[in-house]
Image (cartoon, rainbow, N blue to C red; front, side, top):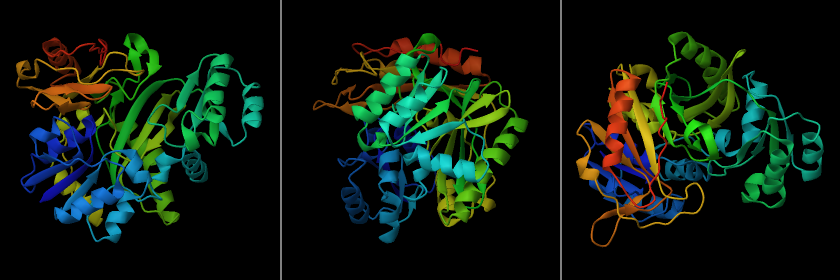
Length: 418
């Protein structure tokens, strides 16, 4: 099979890395890809949101399967476009992707089908939202309705911070039309966890869950990022907890969407808070997480290509998906200044010094005109390793991180520190 992967981050490199191990995969294309995906196949200079360009390339290249990484093309309807053209594509339809593209829609589905989530209210007027907010007691959560590249949610510890977030979303339009509506929610306390599952619209097959770290600095300090690292599975995970999440969250959502005539085929990702009252949904994503994918896929024994095809063809029930025991830890190496302004084009050295049992997933990288790997984004690399225990995997990663360097590089020192 010839496979096209849409996207250019660490998640897409991890998908390419895993798919390259499949005996049924003969060729990999990634659009736009990065320096890591270039080592596994061919990069196409097409933006992940250029649906016309992607469709044309898939047809010209006679691609057998397209796998969509990021949320923006899913929300724009790439799956519908490819299916209308008679092409196999992995990911939810535009209607199903609304579970991520609109937090208001996700809340409506959860309320309708009894899925536990934070109490909250939806507003389309700044004045009404501000008036409601002033009656709340911090901490409080302020969310933009639409896609905001992981930056549209503020957990405000003070009223000033909450009002600032509301002003930024609704009046300054920091996230454009994504901020036309906001949700103001209670702040849930507990342990956070990412729970991902494959769904073919009927059958749901859970992956191993993961924990990611959103804040830029050690100890959960500093601004929110797209994720500074992750580990899998969480030390507090258990089969009982997995069953509870499947029964109270994943199954009701997939069954509910089916009742709405919106079959969900793809990866459903629930961001959860494990509260004393049980798991509560913080958000849904309509795709593989980043950086969770980089720590989940190394623990998958089964053939990923076969799983993706079974999801598309509605025959997930036929597969017995196998996961390895042990753990995986991944740490993000970020550009100086990230998640704020940062420079690109910094030479990365030491990639050839990393131990063989450690995997470096490229995210914000590219090859310069001399074929050297340079920085090309905020999150540059994810250094990942597996081990019999979380501690063993973590030790491998932190032993190898100092071997890689680029100007301004920084990373958290406390990922998976139990």
